[in-house]
View (spheres, rainbow, N blue to C red):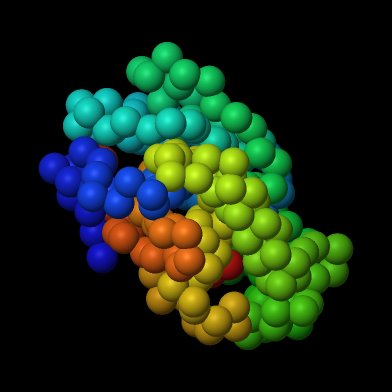
Length: 229
């Protein structure tokens, strides 16, 4: 499901009581390129990531997309992506720590090739989507889901009926997709969340809905998908 740039001009005009979310995954980092699990680790954007952030800001601005408030995770890769939007729109992002990525415990810092060798048991648990396991010092899927659900709900209540731009992370956005589509927490991931993608969900006062997903048509070249989180 993809929303093209020609549709970025508020796709929700006919739903004035609906709270609209445009969800942006941060631009690429060196750890993304190395297929290294980041989690809470505060990794900056690489050169490609900064370029992607500018491309996001430009397509939103050039399409006359208007939003009421901008939120970002407190990790620098998200804040640096949001900064490009701040510059073009002359707004200030609100930093929300609960929008950060899942804490992956002992798996953080390992590549997807290293993890099965160095932490085989944890890696199998991770792939099985055991929703209660904290990956030795990390955050369980259930804890993560509750954190994201609470953050999303708090933001929606504070800005009901508004259009909200959120810059966050692959795992966090996948969790928002699950919330909006009622996908089970232990179910296999069914959507991609590429770096610097635009994704759309909404809340009509009763139900969440996915309106568009994984749009990267504004980017020069391919974007990396999120790792299996």
